[in-house]
Length: 438
Image (cartoon, rainbow, N blue to C red):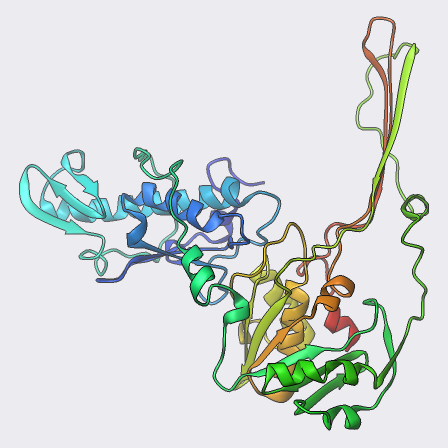
């Protein structure tokens, strides 16, 4: 169980060097395992860090979701980015502030209570000398475990409306993963059946390879992709390529219209969560049933990823919600050492739950692994509607009763739903669609 004073992120990533980087000239770099999904967490964590360090937003750059340098904070999910990620950032930054303050005391020969900190500069009315995070960067050792701080600086930025630095890039330049390019990059599109469980009965790979714009065909059992140097030409031949593939479905899916029957057919378990005393017979009972179907994310920006496999090392750029869990599943699926796989987060379309970001990342990685070229995969709209994970359906049945005194004397709740935890990193297997198909 986590200590109440130690956020889970700090327990898992205890070294200060995992969270912060200081140089003599550049903005301070804040590393975080939480990533921007459109919810504004990037600027929120920067505001927390700025208040803790005594700097302004223009003096800080954010690096979220980087397996090479950043901390492993699992998934950005469950509305925990500020509760857990924010508390970890604050603890790390306050500890860094204390370390630099101790060094400033030596440099200025002034007690800490007489030193002020503003915009990263340590100064005192008792001396004309000053020092800063930048001038002290080579004298403070960050390779040490983070400890709790008693420092409680005033709030300047938390709670304020601050311009998000990612907006101008998203509106005018390369703010999304869809805009990222790699030197020598080839484009790829997936060819899949009408549902994720579809299997390939027949494919004329030779005829597909001869279509305009297609330079390579990657085929492994039920995994099929077409690759080419020009995206427009590749997409132009996609429908013809699909016509050269026959799919089948070994196990028919249940009717999508009868969600209640599907849910009621699931195996379940019963348990009593509270029992005390003897209940009186209810004089009034209310009962209600609610259900929801499968729900698609259907983001405006389709799932996209880039990958490059060179010298036995795989680099993947993804809008995943968890770079470390994705890295672990990629290493297992491709049978590469964990250290040979690095995942870097890039902004994509927003999501509320598990979308296709992880699956398209495997698609790109596997194609790059097979061909040796930098690969960019972007799903088509039909891929998003047929291959992307869906929000799980649910059925809830509630019965409640009150006795003659108006007290609750009966409460019975039944819930039917599929698993909501099929992201990479969950369980011993590999939760990536393409890995199941190859």
